[in-house]
Length: 273
Image (cartoon, rainbow, N blue to C red; front, side):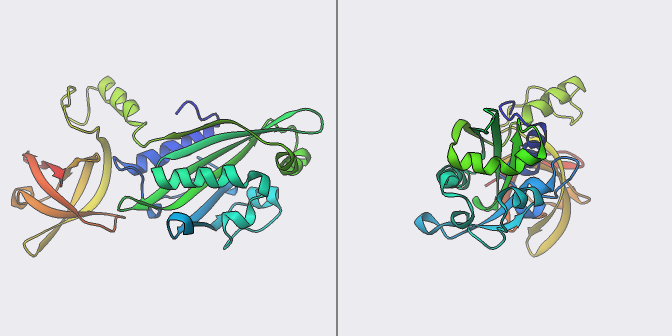
């Protein structure tokens, strides 16, 4: 994570990882832009249409700063239609990598202006989707080393003449977990779990409503921690929950098949099947 230079982009990536809550990536409906974390004017939202060679990335939202820099409206247009030819290949390759891997893709592009000043453009792509399929990309563009607003407006022209990729890589979800584990250790593991946790996948603390279904019955519960393989939940009638059931977590479209692996008076641990 420290490879992301921009503090605001780093905060945006960390918010995405917390939303993922043990999944490869969160659903786009879970994302709530917070201007205190990252300026929405620097964001672009792409909808993914089709698959394979027919896949297209169509702009749903374009922030004011992005529109100003490119001097064109992107909404409703594909990436091929709006990105300049000189930048199209790295832009499309990064989008495809993000959609295929379900990972954050971060890259730094560099050029020079007429005064031999180096200009960098940091590009962050975040995947969102459901049922293991990436459906949307959230992009952040941030120019650095630009001395004033007037030169900032002309920066795109310099990138069109000459562009170098000086950094490119992808980041899987789960990178904030070590921070949570370290904080829990310092606080005596406030979650109440043993410090020598032997779960197959790291869990993180969350607070998300869910609905449990079994034998034509339904009840609400609260997911308190979750990973890619399981979770722990709380409910009023915890004793009445059978050893196997189906559960749909808020903001998710698909149900999960669950099996109880341990029980406590107010909480049960489950494994996703």
